[in-house]
Amino acid sequence: PGAGLAGATQAPRATAQDRRQWQERFEAFRARGLSIDMTRGKPCAEQLALSDALLDLPGRGDFLTEDGGDARNYYGGPLGLPEARRLFCTMLDATPEQVAVGNNSSLALMHDMLAFAVLHGVPGGAQPWSRETDRFLCPVPGYDRHFALCEAFGLEMVPVPMTGRGPDMDAVEALARDPRVKGMWCVPLYSNPTGETYAPDVVERLARMQTGAPDFRLFWDKAYAVHHLTEQAEGVPSILALSAQAGHADRPLVFGSTSKITFAGAGLGLLAASRANLDWYAGHAGVRSIGPDKLNQLRHVRLLRDHAGLLVHMQAQRAILAPKFAIVQSALERHLDGRGVATWTRPRGGYFVSLQVRNGCARRVVALARQLGIVLVPAGKTHPQGHDPRDSTLRLAPSFPDPADLATAMEGICLGILLACTEEPLP
Ligand code: PLP
Image (cartoon, rainbow, N blue to C red; front, side, top):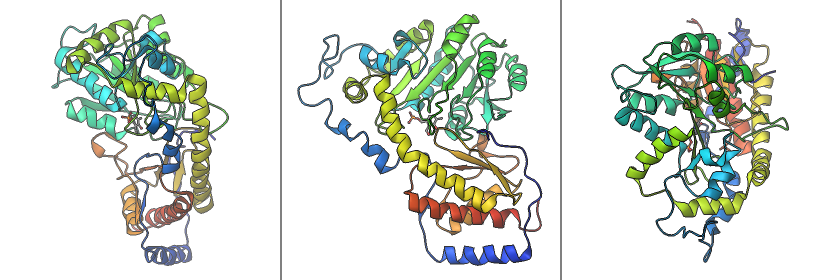
């Protein structure tokens, strides 16, 4: 089975006796007074401990960069240290020269790109992006914080369905002809929340398509570039290379971070882009700050060393995460298979499992789970404006709870799904 969500669910199958049993189990569960947080894709303590060496790095006396600079001082430009740019270029499918290493958050870089675009315009554009009329394509289900950025900058969100192998490209190509469409969010690998990876032909079409706006940008968020859960590491073709070949070198802005590699919120934010885009970024970022935190870059270079070291580190992450994803799958299969109430993804990487429950039931599931002390992300968050028109998408984040809590939480969530989706009258 693939990572994508299989279509709509069939009619639910439950007898009155089934429902009575679930209700009894639900009441017993509620009496346990649990408190389990399954909201965000936060690394657990064991994952964070894999990078504890960072707390002692680079270490007293180790502050010289490879080109002899002093990382304690104002040094170098806004693009970051050469050794850090080299370390992360493979992960971003870029050359070291195309990479900028920033501060602690890729989301902050995305925010800054939008701010610079709205204030100043981007290379290839005749004027600054307009808050009034510009639009962004938003694959759904998607990442709530991408949508929050659009809201913050007044960009109108245009939903595009995901297919299990990336966004629906016929829809994307048709919509992108509108000159008001200035960009698109993409999480090409192990997408948040469906876990799907864009197929090579989808990436190719995104690189080649005609856009109405000459200054159109793909916000290519490789947040889960090396976050594999199986032996079969998935990958996508280089959007930078394909776009350049198609004559659209400035189209992609590639983002990444070490938030889910080392310390979440205390790692490095990454950007890869064409020369023109990097110069543009450096020009504006250089006004905003004299430069990023070079000691944190040095610390990460000392810990991870090179791409091979990074992959070894990610294997240790996988050893912690994969069993948790297995707990989620086995609970869903055990409790929900054959009931006609839900379909769900089986991601081979990333941080999320997403479920499609019976239409009109997602909010009810979240409310029932809360009664059991299990906090899920509010239903609807996976859609622009927090509104899922079918009220059917749920996102599960298995990383943070310990395995025992996770197994308990999954049992409770499944009970909530069974009850919510077989309640009468059904919408
Ligand atoms: N992009 C995606 C797709 C994410 O899922 C997340 C975190 O969940 C982020 C970006 C945030 O990354 P950062 O901590 O680098 O801002």
